[in-house]
Length: 95
Image (cartoon, rainbow, N blue to C red; front, side):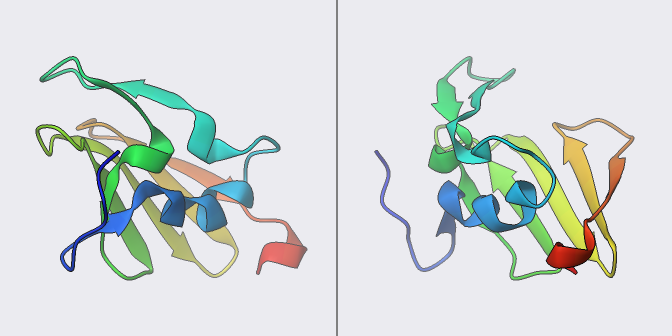
């Protein structure tokens, strides 16, 4: 497992914003990188940014896996290099 460096955080850092939307532990979800085909869990991604936006990248080749951006009342989630994003309304307990 890759250790966090000064330039990025461990993918488990995404647990906070994603737990507000998903009923399961999001860090256990698996991702297969479309560029290098390496499988990894969300918890293994290299995460950059310090909020409100976080970017998760493949720990092997640094290809974009997801972006999560929070704003009051909402979480925006972009998967991969797609042009679109999902907007989730956050429960009042998460705001």
